[in-house]
Length: 342
Ligand SMILES: [Zn+2]
Image (cartoon, rainbow, N blue to C red; front, side, top):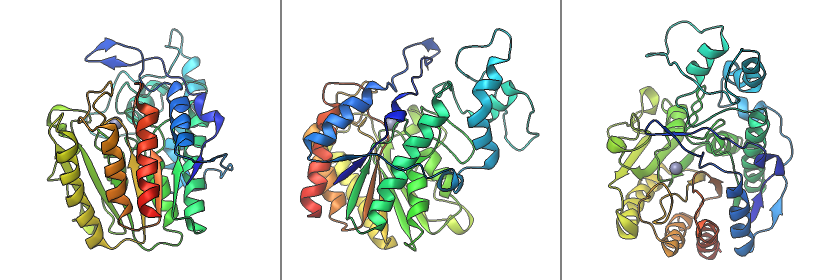
């Protein structure tokens, strides 16, 4: 299976992060890329650079107002006397149906869900290349490959159509799903990250042509808190096309695989033409976020169960943070997927 990645994706190097209000180093480090590249190579994958596909595949799932904000906010922020080095919001609208502010501070609050997605000079460009890696992997699958892996970093699944959040700016999985619809009639997105894929859910919440399914730690006591509950089923024409499977923390391989069976059965009933796997590796037992206690060998079993669907698949990197086994977990997933899909 091919891997798609561009070196520009490493330039985004966020510093700020608050954990329970306390300043901590930001866990979404460029070093993740090196571990993931090593993991992909160990699985026998060749690394290819994506083309620059321009804004059009990104603008297919993000609003023009938001993309203009992402591109220009850093420069505007630097003109504010005494402002922080990175763009970090300090005020949010309670509801987002009021006026759109003209000020940089107001717009930061409007377009950023939390403080975990600081924007620097390099962020927009890095995020575009990350999305283009997803587009390149999708193009490879549209051209007939059974699967491709997009090493997307920064990740994407917490980004809504016009909101950044949780280390995410452009929703790479949503970009891939929308791009697959060039030839597919129906696409499923299966999110196996530790955290609920709230941005992806939000982007497709009113639609019946993209089924969104997410397995994750129960948000009743875990990020992203306000989304990811089992009763969120979609809206309007999308009612019944969103499926959340919250799991207790530390539930382990067996519980994860049992929930995955339920997810896969829902995907089979939807009968999609193609699949996007939002691959977070932070469900791992040794991940700094505490995880769902999935083992390294467990990722191969998860991959194998997904590959048995037999669908053309774009695998998009989401979370998974610095720990000794990060690369091994990717190797385990890609190997498990490749062996079953073969
Ligand atoms: Zn995550």
